[in-house]
Length: 456
Image (cartoon, rainbow, N blue to C red):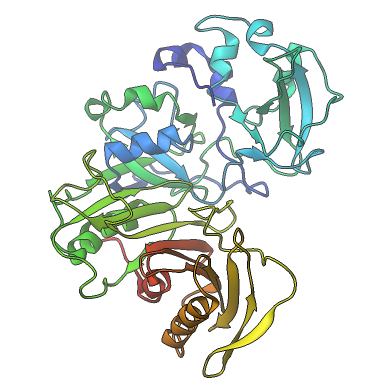
């Protein structure tokens, strides 16, 4: 997604500011009369600068206020993340039920002017760029205007675009506008219904982040709103983690303070599952979060020296809103494995539990599938005897008899071997949680997941 503007361009760009909307929501938000006092101030648990940069790189970060940004708030610049809407990044179907064509430009960089500071480069930071889901999404021909000025007929802040290259026109772009939704283009209520305040930084804290702030969108406040925020800095993380409790109580709570979804982590790790120090990598992505925990030398979280391989891995927990596309971490460990054929045999697995076994081949693993406490369990085995595969599935099924598993739509996939990977996924509070672990531990970790609340 090409964002090529610089802060120096903003003051002279009323067109850019008009186009600088925010993400989409499924229905148009009703107008709320703004609170009318300059004393409308909220307190914010500041996300760290590295997290601000990460959100900017993901093109989901917004800055509240006028184009100069640094004069937004007496206390500093207010940063926002979407709360009540999400931004589409993929065009899945054509004709699209959500978009309608506005124009097709064979080379917008030429047709709208070239060079730094030209209209096309300025617009790149305010267009919502989409990626075709596949090469077959877009047709060979589309009936749309070829007049460059057509893109300016789209209401301010509602312009989308998708690359549509061909052999004849490698720079071709299709411009779109929303069909059944409206993009909010200002903050008209404070605290905002559509946005969550993630940080407020004084100007003197911004220079180190400024290169990435070019990827942030400016969204103005409604006239008379006068939004203000006061920062509460996050507490520092320890220089190393000697046990899992330290991870949960520091990194876990920081995620709870900054993530868009409810944060759940295992309450504990099984005794004897690790020895020595732990290494941690965490991030917020796709409006959710991800944390990887493994054994290793004493290092701070997200250190560039951390190297968590298969042997060191204890678990990966990822969460994101359920409406976003969600994919398993490993293609060879699918949460929805396809049977090698349609003929399955019913086999006993545990008291009161039966499964269906689909015998595989040398290239296709045997699949055993069954249900426990509303979850669908899958066991994949290859390269060993049928009795070992069946015995392993029975062992897992027996260990889960009477278990209380979280959420809805729960699924898990296991593979043969005590150190082989396992995966689990379930939905809870509008969020999909995904767990990856070695051995048969993914479901065990899912059973131990408990919520973390932000510290005051």
